[in-house]
Length: 126
Image (cartoon, rainbow, N blue to C red; front, side, top):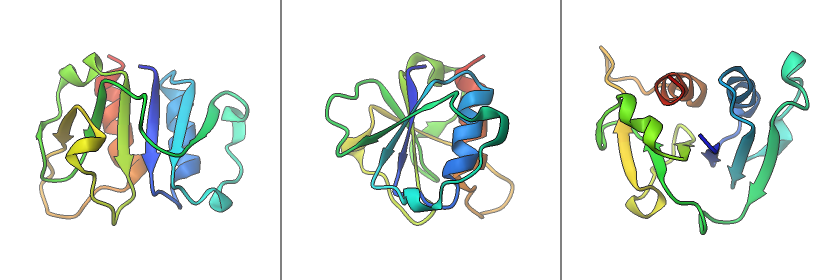
């Protein structure tokens, strides 16, 4: 796993940062994210490098997590170099990722960025 990409995220950047550290991911890429809402990441501080990017050009083997799109998440997500997660009111386009995974849930509520990322990283780092 080369890194996590967040697209148009705001509130959950700190939680995503901590998740990257927890699962051993050293690079967090932010595309059109509201970084003014970042703050204390406690013991994970300085353990993950944040990169601000203007596009996904040059990112290959990207697996996206998107509600209702793609295949159910499984261990094959580990075959990809990056996990892409969009903000809660954002739709990821087919041009943004090589493959799309969804996380089946009992009810129709969307998972938050950090909840989806935790599940994605769990599968990707096993």
